Length: 268
Image (cartoon, rainbow, N blue to C red; front, side, top):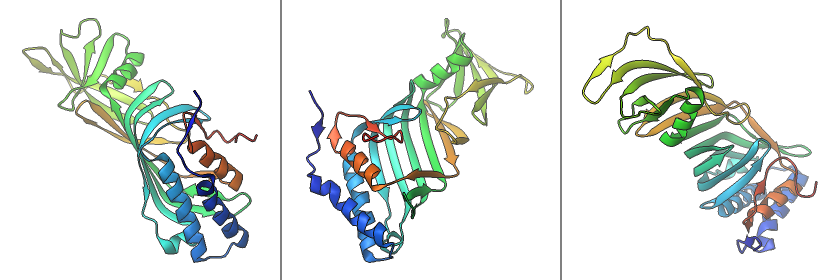
């Protein structure tokens, strides 16, 4: 069974592109530019909000459900190609064999730099991700094969023997150093007792899953059953010729096909 359409007429898709072509050819600051950018943004929002998408990237496919795509658009800024901050939120994210419960991306100072082709720029980009206990256990297991790890409902990270989880657990403090978690045991707990360990107890490194190129982890914290990660990217940019925008809009208007964002359009 082939892909289904979202029911958008081709006129609905091409209207913002026709408006953009006029704006870019004149390079004049006008209310028409603001209308063109707002129309394009609202068209993309209509196509992605609430949908489950598979996006094809250069470093692997990612499947996610978009829960938010929004920006506080300002007419005066839109007239000169400024979109302000754009916020994107998603849940149920699968990427390169990894699972994230939810993620939020905030693209700051999104603007269009004129040129041939025009370039869309955001600087900086902030990312927040939640890693579930099950996914975290897989990360721990890769580094410490005999142990299983989890974050309990009280927000404390614990390691247990994989073959004998009921014997007891080791509470660990966690420190982020680049893409590595350093786990320092602080206490041993059994069903009846808890022993505090010396402060000089050695720490163990656990490497986190690789993130998008250039994205740097900046902090982490624990919540009930979850590891919260935040990262930042100094600048993100992408060429946005009219043909490429048209290709992406056409892909988004169909249901059941992956969205190709590898830098190669279907015309290539």
